[in-house]
Length: 77
Image (cartoon, rainbow, N blue to C red; front, side, top):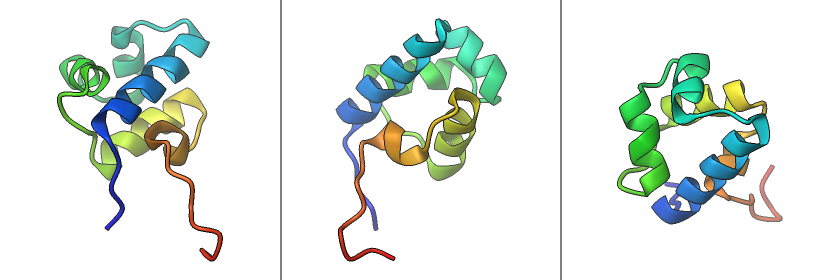
């Protein structure tokens, strides 16, 4: 299981969203993720599941890895 920290996801999500000049509502509309969920993710109260992270990453034009701040191990294939 891959684990990641809520605070890291919150920070990275805010940074990626800011690059687009989007509000939380804009990201919600572009990704199909609820605005309340986006707000909770950015506050670090909860972490997005894979489906939600994928939708937001796709809308933001970044990888899920960029959102969660995860770097694959050197021996990963």
